[in-house]
Image (cartoon, rainbow over all chains, first blue to last red; front, side):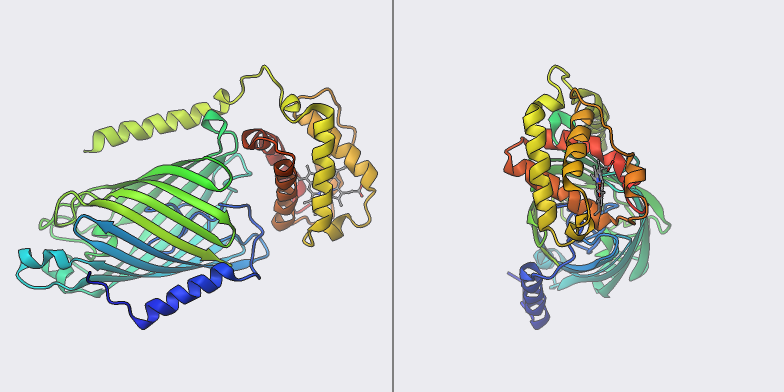
Length: 289
Length: 144
Ligand code: HEM
């Protein structure tokens, strides 16, 4: 109810549709190997970046992926527009604009806090391996830069800075013949971070202002070539005395009808975000070319 | 809050780790599930039709002896699927040397195989068992 559709949002949606319906595309990789690019634009599951790179570009291709993601929890909504560009299945650059509507905190605060806003910029490099074909997992390292474009609320609740970098290493392995004969995927990511609520509440805080290494994982099984279901876990720091931060988890389904389009839907338990028990639905629409 | 989650993960890890062993009931060979000699030959023929239709790779086979290639591919699929065949062709490294096969081309051949098996109504888990047998050959085929 607080969302204000603006020009660039509509333009971004238009670009997404154009991407999804475009016929010229980089399609040298197998279906589903680009994962999704929800939230910050780095290819992965719903809340965890994976070692795979966005889209379907193989070694001599490059390609763009765009996504619109919406999360609706009991008290909040999060909208994210993300773009991701993969060069040669080697380097992925990504950017996103995230808007977290906390209007429901108005009664508690006595004023309308507006939205939390964050822009992100990321780079991910594939170091080794191919998630599907090599025995060893695919391993990538990434940097994710976050910058709050509205910093009043984060500073009030004790955040120490409005921008910072996360560093992560991710390993993804696909088993063609996984449990119960289905294709399966496991991803493990270690992230060095100071972000509060993935950066939406700034970086660092009164309780802790140094980097911590957080454990994240996704496990999925493919029902068929186009549909994967799985769960994820993302450990989070707890830097602010004002508001306890919980680890995130979700169960998700990702549908890849073709190499141009994907939908990731999830039920996410985000724990306490100032208000307790934030859980709800999550959906991401993605287009690649 | 952390505990139950951790145990779920460990469970999942163990399940994935066991997957490699659990996948083979071993009574029926992959060769049988692919439809025996007839099935394997149909898959290879269908795959070569799809290869010929794919602009990314068709040119690479333009000068090939397709009769020989069809026979050797069928032998190879039969052999890796535990069928009663012996592969009599060149090794993967030898037969692709000098071609500088790219990942795009390799994936295109794999896709031709997948679509061929889809058309022949081979069950997805059976398809994946064959792909898993061919996957290790990738490093012997690309960029040689
Ligand atoms: C899963 C992937 C592949 C498998 C299992 C495979 C298997 C084979 C086999 C069994 C042969 C016959 C060897 C012999 O003549 O003794 C062969 C030959 C050949 N392969 Fe592949 N191959 C694969 C991928 C590719 C790719 C991606 C290309 C290039 C686009 C390619 C191009 C060729 C060519 C041009 C020949 C020679 C055919 C001839 O003239 O006799 N292969 N391959």
